[in-house]
Length: 287
Image (tube, rainbow, N blue to C red):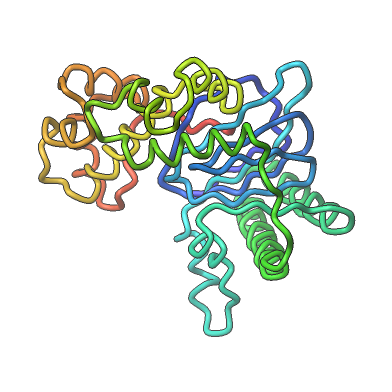
C-alpha cells in the first residue's frame, strides 16, 4: 500500500489517531504544533517528519492561515523489491530506529525534497501502470534522501521545548504510565503533577487541541487494536477491562466512534485478514 497526497490543504477535524503503516509528513506552510507520543514539534516550512504510525499523533493548527502538507502512507513491504537487494542501503532504518523523527530541511535540502515530492506527484497524476511504478521509484529516492539526512542530523542540537510544552510533555508521560488505571481522573493528575486541574486542562487543550481524556481514550483504543492483533484469543470484555474501562458498553461505544466498527467486528476482520492490516472501511485521512 502506498498512498500519497501532494500539497493537501483540505479542512479536517484534528484528532489523535494511529495507523498500522509508516508515514512521511512534509510541512509546506502554515502554523502547526505536531504532537507525536509525548513529543511536541513546533513546525516550520521544510520540516519533514518520519512516523512509526502506531504512535498516537495529531496536528494542532492555526485555522486562520492555510495549512499545506504533503503526506505519504506506506507499508514497508512495498519496498522489498529494493531492500532485499544485497547492496541496498537500509532506507527503512530511520523508521525502525527512531520510530518518530523530525528533519529540519532548509536551503538546498528543502529544495531537493520539494523537487522529489513534485516529481512523485507528476508520476501519480498519470494514473497508469507506468506512473505507479515511477511513483514507487521516486518514493524510494525520497527515502534515500531522508536516510542520508538522518545520519548527519544525529549530531545536530535539538530544539528545547517551551515551559508550557514541557509541562504538556510531562502530562503525556504520566498518561502513558497511567492510562490503563480505571481510577484515573483529574484529581489524581493534580496530585501527581502538583498543578491545578484547571491549569492542566487549559494548557493541554491549548498545546494539543484535545482534552486530556480525549487523549487517554485515543490511547486506550489504539492499545485495544494492538491487543486484538497480537492476542487474538482475548475476549473483548477482557481487553476493555485491561485498558481501564469499567463498563463494556463504554468501551464498545468509544471503539466504534474512533475506528468505525465495533470491537467484535474488528476482531472478525483481523481473523480474516492474515496480513494483520484489516480493511475496516474507515478512510485514512491525510492530516
